[in-house]
Structure formats: C-alpha cells, structure tokens
Image (cartoon, rainbow, N blue to C red; front, side, top):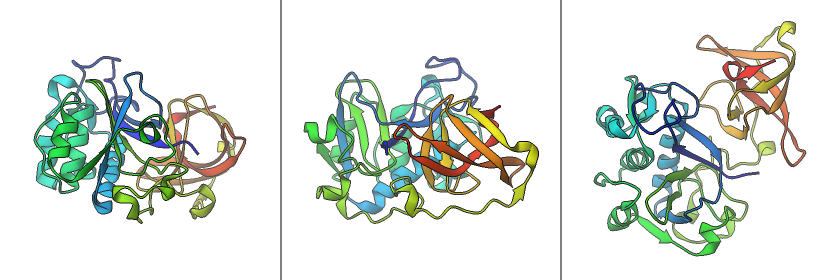
Length: 278
C-alpha cells in the first residue's frame, strides 16, 4: 500500500495567496500518496513516539477541516486561532489560513514541541535545535518511502515544500531509529486494511446503488465520519461501487463502497458522498 502524506498545498484558485479564508476545495489542505520531490527530501523524525502520533493526528485534523485553507499572506492565522485550543486543529471552527511550513509548526506545537515560526528554508535547523528530532539524509529515508514512519516530517533540501507522513512504509518495522517504538497504530492508515474492523452500515437505499467516480482524492475509511481510520486514498476519477448501504453523519451520507486499487486488490469501506458522482 502506498504511504500517505498530508500537507498544505495550494489555495482554491491554484495559487499561493489572495483566496478566501477556510477550505474552499478539498485540495488546499489534503492527503496524497508519497512522491519524490524534484528538490529532494530531508527526513525529520520525532524522537518520541507519542509526539510523532500527535503530529500525524493534527495533520489529519487539518486535512479533514472545512475551516483551514491555504494562503501564504495569511499563513499565521491558524496558529493564532488554534492556540486557545492547545493547537488542536479539530477544535478550530473559525475560517483561517496557513501554508505548508506553518501547518507543520502547529502540528509540532500540538505535540508539545515548542518551536518558533519557521519556513521551509530554515525549518530543519529550527526543529533540530529543539532536541526533539533526528535528521536523516540517506537515500534509504529520502528517496524511498519504505522506511518512513507515521509522524515523520519531510522537507525539501532547499526552500520549497514540507509534508507529514501519515502511514508507515513497508519496511518501517525493520528500522530502529528514533521513534521506532511507536505503537500508536490505532486510527491510522498504517494497518493493513484486512486487520482493521469495518463498521457496519446503518441504512439501505436501493436507489443509491451503482457505480460512481470520485471528484477528488478521497479517503476511504473504516467507518462513517472523518474521525474513522483511513484505509486508503482513492485518486480523483477513481471508480467505486455502492450497493445501496450507507450511514448518515451530520447530514452527510457516507456510502459503503468497494474499490479495486492499482495492485488489483479490492477494498471495502466508507467514503463521503459529497465527493462522488455517477
């Protein structure tokens, strides 16, 4: 299974500033599969497993929030708004903005790691100076996703972009650096889908049955609602099948669907109907 990452990416107009506060699209703050950035990655790994889990969890909160958007000209407003909640993004209900580096900073603050304002050009040194992180630069960690761990932070070698790793790589359990004792695998995508218990759907409507396409990259979850475990990310225009079963959460129907991934494996889980079209 591909390693999942989350980050602040682009505003609703495909630019970097001037947009409306809050999430106007599903792409401003969102998840995607790991990729090798053209500038190359440096891995910043939390030394404490609990901190790593909190960093990942807060990034997931941001990706699921309708109140957090992307705007470099207003990039500190998320930190200002979330401070009263201990930087817990799930509690933010005021439209605000951030960028990739400032979002990672808020995730670190939520994990109890005090660090000053930084951007991608200096964040490696800022985080290293806290004494809470290990810097890893070998190809093993930076050119492949195999040894990545949930809660890892990736930043480009020069000013550019930064992301948080949300699931474990295929060989993460073999690696003994830093937060290798992290046992906080509940409610994250690092488990194999077969080992995660899928909630039963609560309702049935025959008229909902059929084949759908996703309108954006879409999280498939083990249950209805954004707090449920992410099983995989279905890419935009991915094909899913609903057999009429669903669960309603906060006036949104979450369809129970099946999806065949790029490896030919058929997965089952819940997706928000807001991002599906027949």
